[in-house]
Image: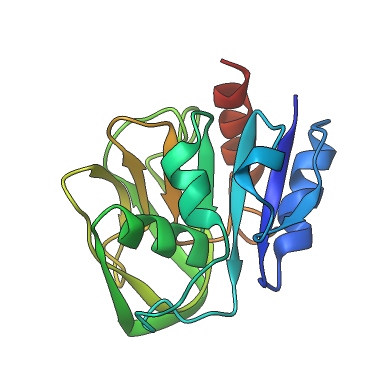
Length: 187
């Protein structure tokens, strides 16, 4: 089992890698410039990052190839999720209320990623930008008071996006979210 973390310049990329390693998953942090053909993985995590998704010209290396060609599960976190949503026709932009710190998340739709997790729990936020609207290809999974799209999934692929940061200790059930993602990568 191998799940690599795609480095998009996020401050917590190493924590995503550490969360996987603590769950006995073979994982490396890889550049977002890594060609798709060089991937030998059962899943990918698209890290958060410094780029502002509100910049319409923002690129994340070869991430479009991973999303277009990947037939394995992918979990995008923060900028990774925002990029994924935009790639599949959603709209992103500056947050009406940028969030830093704890917020309560409400799971709207039962799904594999939030299995064995309560309907409401505390998550850690760190974002200026957010997903404003999902396309028909994407399904809303969770929201919070100040951010409509906290989590989503692709309707036809095993791709998930999380606005919040499951890799930090302040997010309740973050380890369970990673366990659920790992289980999907084993299928």
